[in-house]
Length: 459
Image (cartoon, rainbow, N blue to C red; front, side, top):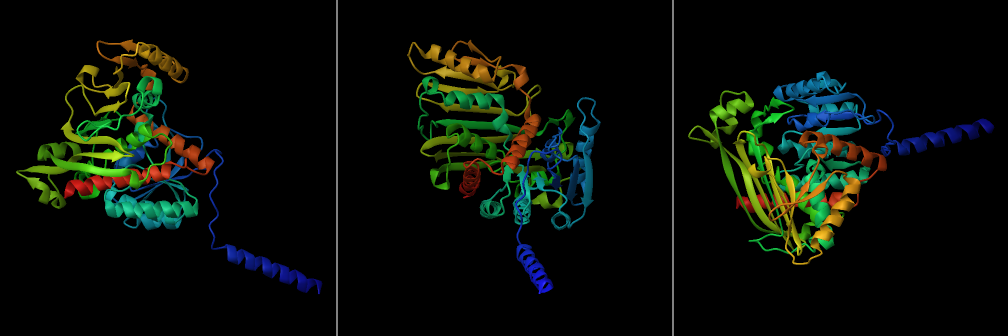
């Protein structure tokens, strides 16, 4: 009788195990050393390597890389090796590389990691994200996570599944870590200085964000090599859904900090797109390929490649008029680089970021007073004094018509370093087990806005 009872108990335990076997246990992170194991999928963009420009105690030094045979994956390996072999603060990543056309299936079946990093062909990226999320893998994705309406619908599904499986899907918003943007946000949310954000109009928006980029530039001190497919907007995405992602994100983040914004808060007023013409010689310089490939021939006019990398749109977000503009030139003037212009208009003051020739092509922050209040200067000085507690060394300097917020060089870590800062924030979220409640709806609203702008401009 006693033996029979033991057998029944054992059999019941096996049944319980069998019933539970189909369930996925939630991944938990504690911040312990090496507990995060990265898998890099199809690294077609140098941003994939920039995640590994520094080391993190929480991240295992062994990183598995999956991708098709070709220059994309070899360039990625070379970049990581460059970080490992540099003289100052070398990294010590160990890459385990799989090359093959079944790279996505191989990663899912082997699953040697718990976080997938992806930066590359944007046409396929949303599928990569959804596949990884379906498999219960956390995802850190470069922008954009989708480049058209179809991709947006798939991305929405991915976020739904991520919630069900309790994994974190997050995009790399580096511009939130740029010091002039941080301080612009702080000042625009200081009522005694800024007042209230004006509603604006389509002709004179409350917020304007303009970004100028270049196909040819230097990354980590070396001339950039871009993949051939980068010039195919069906794979890379047009500028209106690519770089514009950052600008829309900043508008949401600065105007409505920690506030949930929704699709219904967005109304598209107008949108347009236009091409940058790239000569065959320029194409060869930046891709190392001597001729336009067959899949780009339909976009070649008079031996120049027509790339729809430029876009502009005006929309309202929660009743506030905003303008986004993205321009891609081939190469910057000597001494210049990618530039950014931003203005946030308040009832008492405007807060501006300029990065032109007058600023030596370095972003600088200004405050323009719109009030006759004699206490304005006192309020501004008090605001800067409060900010100095967090950012010691910043100073207030009066120019002819503007107040200049002088920022020490130590805070200007550069675009490449921001990837490490985003990754550290993501690692923190993994330990916390969740994103802030506003992040997911705001990510979805951001991609709704950019894909709606493309749809509008394409009509």
